[in-house]
Amino acid sequence: MADIIQLLPDHVANQIAAGEVVQRPASVVKELLENGIDAGASSIKLIVKDGGKALIQIVDDGIGMSTTDARLSFERHATSKIQKAEDLFNLNTKGFRGEALASIAAIAHVDMQTKPADTELGTHLKIEGSKIISQEVAAVSKGTSIAVKNLFFNIPARRNFLKSNHVELRHITDEFHRVALAHPSIAFQFYHNGSELFNLRKANHRQRIVHIFGTKTNQKLVPVVEDTQVVKISGFIIKPEFAKKSRGAQFFFVNGRFIKSPYLHHAVVAAFEGLIRSDTYPGYFLYLEVDPGSIDINIHPTKTEVKFDDEHTLYAILRSTIKHGLGQFNVIPSLDFEQDQNLETPYAYKNREASPPQVRVDARFNPFQEVSQKKGAAHSYKGGMTSSSGASTWDSLYVGLQSEMDSKEDYGSLKIESDTITGSIFESKNESEANIATTFQLRRKYIVTTIKSGMVVIDQSRAHQRVLYEKFLKNITIKVAASQQLLFPLQLSFSKSDMSILNEIKDSLSTIGFVFDKMEKEQIEVTGVPLLVTESEVGIVLDQLISDCQMEVTGESFSQTDILAKTLAKTLSVKTGEVLNSASQLALVNDLFACKETRVSPFNKPVYITITENDIDNKFI
Ligand code: ADP
Ligand code: MG
Image (tube, rainbow, N blue to C red; front, side):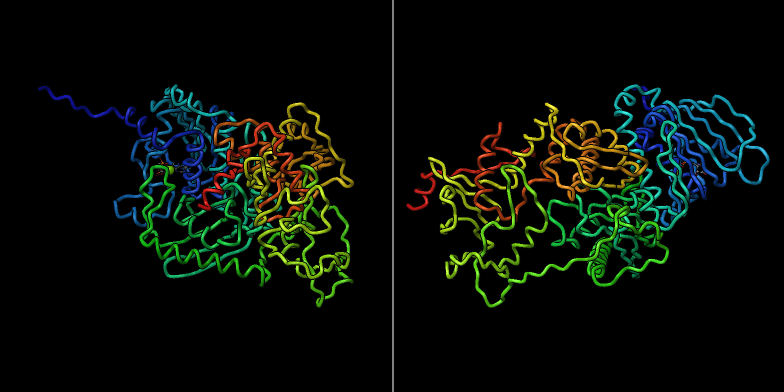
């Protein structure tokens, strides 16, 4: 048989390699930003058009390249960063594979200008699909500028696979965040379609985080630091009370490189255990320094996965460091002398007068008086609406201390363990006739009620989500939402990327009753809110909306109205652990069964189960 094996031509090999290195415009951004950093730049500019499909340009003021190096840099396996295999184990640079430029040039139009500091003139090089189109001497400034146009121009299938400009921009922004967070001592600018998205000056880590994620982030950060033989850890965790329902700010950097590590993530989650709800995620910005010889970053072409020699030890150290940090922030005020003083004012209070603190004393309180709990005092469910506040759960923890002179009739009555059952399973005399024994609340979680064939156990939170969801959906679709004017306009600040999302959903928000007066750079002024939302909830609702929209964008299906209704339902619903009085329980049950769909929550979870008389009978056999 004749020989049939051939070596692939270089441009084909490059295209294949490109498939691994360049998945989307964001991959190009990552590689080029990293090259700028490796070149020792102190300032890097990123210019993007149409989500990176039309143009990605990166301009750095680093060491530049000689004419020969400029040509060579586009060859596969051409790198200045390692010479021998051992160098791989002592890496201090981002690059080392020598694949990025070759791959990018194989699938795009590349225009490079570069000049080292010590030469008068630089080089201007144009390459299209691995072919050099032109090479000229050019009068350019020190450093390198690489413009990548028409990505995937010669692979239509890949180009068609790209998502909307908006989604691609989001991916680019994510990469930009990662690189900028890892290198606060480098200044970064980022423009999209001519408008400036970020202008980050040289800063420390904390300032960089705040400059990227907005002023209000500052108050949420808790510093962590640990120095051991195996690893040095520094950075910040987000205070547990700001934990989000979506994976938001979760950043690990190892030796200045952003990495993904489910294993280390787990260590952080373990440290937060018991401090945040199980359906929320901790936020963190953690910088790990380890001996470069003890890790292998070679295992993934995009270099975001790292193998550690001693993962178990790292896990244990990380977990205890975070626990320690969490334990300290309550006790010891954090002093950070490098902190920007202007970052200090909490956003909601910027333009308000300070009011003297108030101490509320219950004059009627008598510690020697035994009283029973006044049922459901802590929460009101106004026929489908809720003025839910975190306080309600707290109140009920202290019910034993409440003094209720007016509930004399309860003296000596049977005390029900407040955590288990509230409501009227044992009827009390002051309940109105109508409500007697039709519903009761179980473990502050379920509403139990009877039906003809037996009984129904309803998950209170999911039921309320369903009720609110349908209400909001109706409002949005028929655009009739009532709005309540706020007495004082509410000033809220957001990061730039959050603002771009808010701008997109602004119209839908106004159909449900939000009124925005001003929407400027990082500030919005809210003058009206939907009837069901209280003033104190506005910030939470908007934050949640932004993060949900963000998640949905990356997760394809994107119907604004649906996300909006779901988020509002989730955020405003009665939660597990909240006490509902009998009237509220009944109202909730009625509202639920008036819904179009009663069986599942907006998130497709069962809302109730039924237990028939038969089921019960069978248990007694
Ligand atoms: P790697 O970064 O893995 O070495 P690349 O293909 O990204 O591979 O780059 C190849 C080489 O081109 C680098 O090793 C470096 O010498 C040079 N180079 C690339 N970008 C720049 C830049 N912005 N400034 C100076 N040199 C650069
Ligand atoms: Mg590189």
